[in-house]
Length: 72
Image 1 (tube, helix red, strand yellow):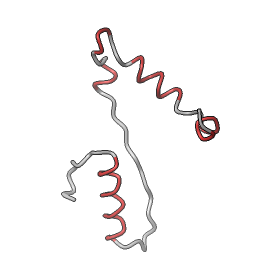
Image 2: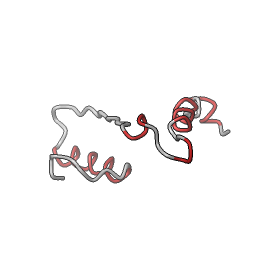
Image 3: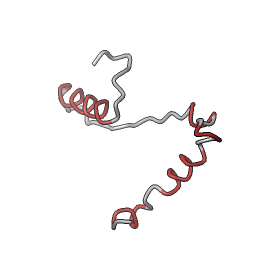
Image 4: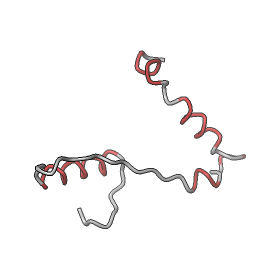
């Protein structure tokens, strides 16, 4: 375990939940099939729209979630 894992907990609870979400034979449990999360990043009122769009595009690419209702 690296230094960062020790200082922030190493996502142990998340790893335990992920392991518990795999049922017998490797099938996903109901919890795993319905897992949803959101990210919120707050920008100041003077932030250029282009910077906001770039940030959103970055998160979509990093999380492989190229979908949404805002067409970017």
